[in-house]
Image (cartoon, rainbow, N blue to C red; front, top):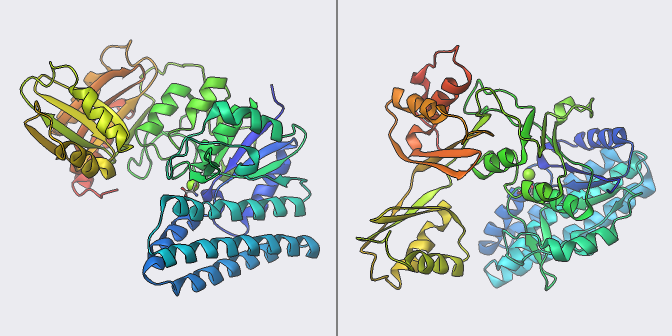
Amino acid sequence: MSAQTVVKFGGSNLKNSSDFVGLARIVKAYNRPLVIVVSATFGLTNKIEGIIGSAINDHTLIAGFIDNLKTEQVNLVNQNIPDKALRNECLHILRQRTEGLKAILQRIALIGEVSPSLHDLALSYGERLSSVLLSHILTAHGVACQEILPENLGLITDGHFGDATVNFARSAPKVKAQLNEDKTYVVPGFYGISADGEVTLLGRGGSDFSAAAIAHCIDARYLDIWKDVNGFLSADPRFVPNARHIAKLSYNEAAELAYFGARILHPGTISPLKAKKIPLRIFNIENHDNILFPATTINGSAELHPGVIKSIAFSDDFGILRLKGAGVGARSGILAEVTNRLDHEKINIKSVITSQISINILLSVSDLEKALKSITDNPLATVHEIETVTNISVVAVVGEGLMEQTGIMYKVLEAAASQNINIRTIVMGASEVSAYLIVDQSDRNLTINIIHQNLFETDKQLNTQQYEITTAF
Ligand code: ASP
Ligand code: MG
């Protein structure tokens, strides 16, 4: 087993200039070699996305954007690196990289459209700037470390722009060979390199996944992810004010929660860790004085809670492609043809629910139109009607033991029924630790709160009035 722990700092840990010193303090407290994965500073990825969009129409905006970025960097460096030589070295590299980003933005403006490859390359600069900053600031605070980029590390992806996954078989030997167990490294997260050497992003929030992938490749002792919240809770506290803290989750529970919309982790984070039994510890930066106490620890042990359900997650990013026709559920080949076409369009299927007269395919909302077109362009004889369903939410309940214990779903459904919530679909059995409901988006807040109350707050009476107006998320 490797001596190394992989530590990931996200954009939420990099909101202010003084945050870098806080990270240096945490890194020192570990008192051992680390592989540190870092995201872009808070909001920078969105800003780069924004300038890409506007530069196409007005290339003159690029100069102002780059100037602002440079000013921010100079301030950050001046505030965090006292040593002049180190400061100048850091500024020099930052300037080179920022000029690199500028050249890409200019190319995009010149062509007048954003190719997936230039898009991914431009967005990767948020992380590339962070890793220069953090590695120099750590050095300035007495932590000897080296920046290493995913292209030099050998983090190879499947080449899928925008939302790639890591090719573990190809990456592991390279990554292992690059990282010396006795040294501390700083790696920019969020991207890897395709087999042809192109930058491919690992999806939004992808630095969690970068860190998990590297941990997998080097058989790390732990993956520690630092957040600005107290780990996993029984529901999203922005929507459920009485959400409770969860100290331990199994890999399967955390994976299902992330899949069903718990925004705390990139959904791909768990599986590379589970495969190598690497514990994931989530720390709250607000409690950084004590690195011995993670907010939530996720590992292979499946603990049962007395109430079974540990947490409720929801996602609005589900839409249904519904194919109707007498007997679609009984004919062979229809689903194969449909999934083939979706695969051809690189559309990910989130779930499939079939009946005798209809096939319901759950997709990301942004894929619905393309999916519909892929079927209507070349109609299937057996399908007489196709519709898409939007403005729905998936609400999932997650807990080890869900399939073994009776009465759990009764409580969930009883809660929904008590508020006359119309449940469009119920799915259970697809995984041993989760079940989900589909409701109208306008009922989502009430649904999660009433279920939360019925499962976790039997002592409280919910004031349902406050959920009558729902906010789209
Ligand atoms: N900076 C990227 C994003 O905002 C990746 C990350 O934060 O993990 O999506
Ligand atoms: Mg992030």
